[in-house]
Length: 68
Image (tube, rainbow, N blue to C red; front, side):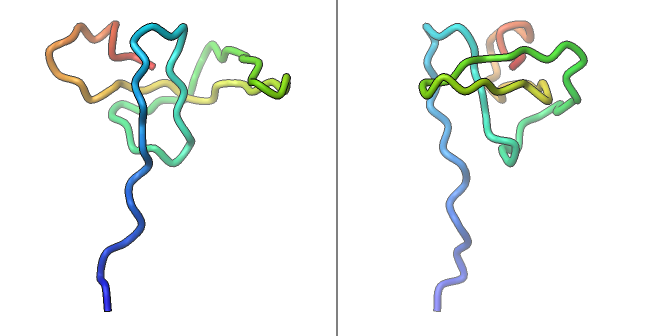
């Protein structure tokens, strides 16, 4: 019998993208409700609105670059 749970959510970093978006169940540091939500249009032309901001856990880069 295995005692392993489900794998953690996978994240793929694209340093050339306009923004970084994560699922609601991703565990990121400094998770806060978004006071200025943004709306994005996804591939199927539906829109989604941001709900929170957080920080990427990548040491060595400025905080401004880690905020998502």
